[in-house]
Length: 341
Image 1 (cartoon, one colour):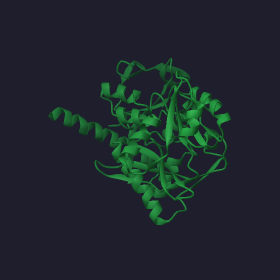
Image 2: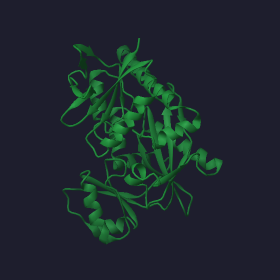
Image 3: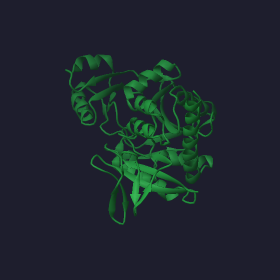
Image 4: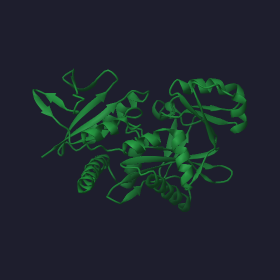
């Protein structure tokens, strides 16, 4: 019997359109012989399923859908909401209360990894890999630009502490440009991360749980940006904004180091489902630096994660099958553990 899967997309952030595009790709590639797939769009004023140009509201009391007087309950949720509320733990907590399995990290891990400052501090404490020096400022506090300028050397990055797709992010080369960059980031979130710039090459590595204890790393990938940094336009608007070298043009030892460190970080954070861990390699020292972990990577036609999977021989349909199967098995395992206590 086919399972009902809610493909949850949209959200409340500037990544809404990316999420919708990602959901479209997933809907085209998921195995409909195994699953009845319903794309549920989440917006601030409405959670709905579209059919025949009509919006059918979700019953938030139990996350159910009624079509033609038939109530549809979901066996699982494939969350593809980038940003809030799908990447910061809110949806995960909601589904936990309703006992609905989902494909991402837990509510706690999603919350921790979505806050860049908190995640950086935690990864630094693991002593697995270098983490760039940083500081943070809040919207309601008085800014001390002199202190920031002496704490973090220029050039530096200014970015919202919560958010993705490089929205609100700036590279700053002098003190005069610092305040406008901070104000730009405040438009996205009330806390702003100010981080030292690591000059060098940028890499990414997908990590995924494929069994109860088995975690695999995909090919290390180099991001070759044609802009000053890999910003929103380079990621999603300009087809020439960046190139992906898969696998990266590195020594076998360095490729293995990136893959190994990505898995270690994934395990240490107690991540689940799939994630993408991003790194820099310092141009002068060749040291590896942690950049961030993305627990809800994009699935648009030009996104990195599907391309990484292709290089391993894992097609998109099989990837989605793994995601859903693992989510259902994790839920069953946790439910069994709780029942036995």
